[in-house]
Length: 96
Image: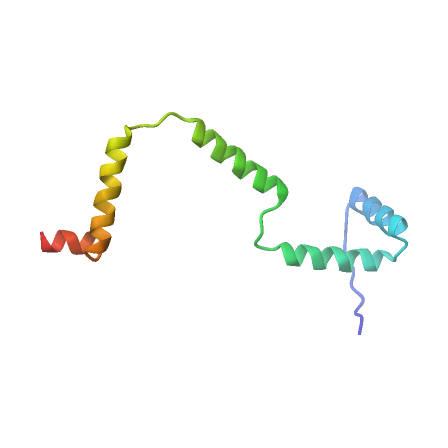
């Protein structure tokens, strides 16, 4: 059963809706239903613009020089692994 609703949209959105309906040879209601379905399926996912922004941020981070030498990082990783094997960092401190 279909329910009639009223929306207010700006002129640009209305023009896009009319253009989409015309190009697809479907009703404006069908365009709106399809748009809502696609939008709902994307909730929680990154848009292409968000994905590209995150990639640029990551690339910028990776281009930065290291703040310490690899030996210091290796030591920290070794400490973390040992602490995990012993039940976590807090457990390691309590037993020390």
